[in-house]
Amino acid sequence: MGQTARTTKLLLDLRARDQGGANSNKRRYLEETVTILDAARQFYLDFFLAHPEKLMERVEVVSKQTGEVREGLISSDKLLTWAEFQTVETREHPTPLASWNFSRQFPDFPNRYRRSVIKDVIGKARGYLTTLLKWQRSGKKQGKPGVPTASNHPTLYAGTFALELDALDLRKSFVRLKVYTGSEWVWVQYPTRYNRYFEQRRAEEGWEQESPKLVLGKQSAAIHFLQSKAIKARKIVESKRDPDLVTVAVDLNVKQLAVITVRQHGTIIQTRFVSDQGLDQARFRHLGRIAKKQWQSGQAVKGERSNQQLWRHIRRQNTDAAHKTARAIVEVCEQYPGCVLLFERLRTIKAAGGSKSRRRNRKQANQLKGKINQLAKEKAYAKGVVSVEVNPHGTSQYCSRCGAKGVRFTSQAGQRVTGKGGKLFFCPVCHYECHADFNASCNVHHSFFREFHWQPRTPKSG
Ligand SMILES: [Zn+2]
Image (cartoon, rainbow, N blue to C red):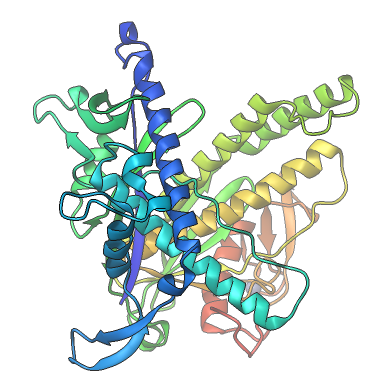
């Protein structure tokens, strides 16, 4: 049994009111809220670090399952109660510690926010103290752990947040948030940027809802909804014993982003090519423009990022392509329940030769491969599909039919022109001809089952 988590973003609509969004104060309230929560977190971080003996107190813990009593670290619930008793004024307890009076410093601070802040800080402070202690014991001079920062995205618990979805028209949905105006705490409604995708993900079965977070960017504001799911998946060793096992192999490339082949009982039963739709060329052009602009403006100013918009555009296009390709891979996996997803272990290739923009483009393409690999694994695992990385040795050089060493070629006017950059593959032994990336994808299956002589005997798959 494993666990997987995912986040779905819901954007708040902070455009001017005449454009259908919230008014300008609403944005400011969010900023004020983040600021005051950070300040409150700093208060409790200082408080706990001033009481390390309590934070690391060992107490007797009774196991809920076995009833066994053993010594353990004080629970965060107990610490929370203790911290509140020391710092918060109540009618029954009107005198908290004089120098740590939270109620005076933060009047009318909502209880829910206070508790979420304290819980945040307990983990941070404990982690810091543990690494600090380790460092002190090691006797090293360098590498002293830094004091953790108090800033964080606010966690929204029930009582500070409510999602109001209009059952009839989801476009009129609101998020109600308890926010700080700079002088008081009020409930404010924020219109959301509706998206159907969000609805679909929230309602999807098997996913557990966790407390959402408010994430305030420079230009945008969003609520990140966290979900988690328990995953049941077979172990790879068990899968490998299954004679009906379906393997889905992926070969990642530059122009054909992914070539997906599905194999069962030794034959390829499905193939899917995911093209980059001209992304590589477009990116090359963009990078050329960046290089030109950098040359024209002379030496780059230190600390100042140039061509920000273009870079952002390139990044977005890459992320988008990565998600789409990963999605396509998982779509294929979903057709074969219990299948195993195979990737080649990615090689770290340093881009060399060619112009600056060409090198940069190769680097970007490599990063894209890594991104697709990572996203596809995550998305597949959420569907209960386990991935394996196989040894990439020889997958593009050898024939996937007979295992002999082959050549790359291009077809020009009906003639075979052999060359390294060729998109086609030819085997001189069995005369097999096919798309080179397809051949490589088929070889990934062979590599998983270690079927050919050129594959190393000792597996390094993970
Ligand atoms: Zn062959």
